[in-house]
Image (cartoon, rainbow, N blue to C red):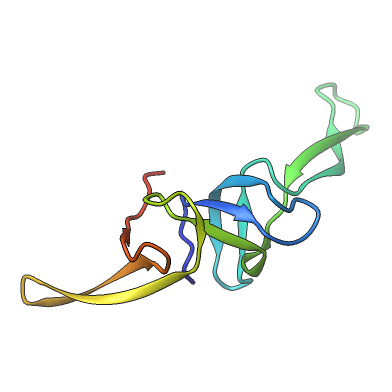
Length: 114
């Protein structure tokens, strides 16, 4: 997968088309990503009360759900445009290192801090 945690992405398909967000978590098995403030849904849950009674109190909470990685596109930190991601092998102290590159400006895309 070419998108990592901490990357800045734009949604290119669906209800949230055109929204820019930050990747919170990547789910490689499901091929999906969790974005900050995107795809928020309401969930009905029953929370136990603090009293000794076994009664549970209903409550509605808002949670973020993951969306498919094919619906987002990485924003290059160098040229600040939505771009496809490529890989390049470089020689670093005698070892081969695989780095991500922007297909538009051909610059290296470094991992963002969390």
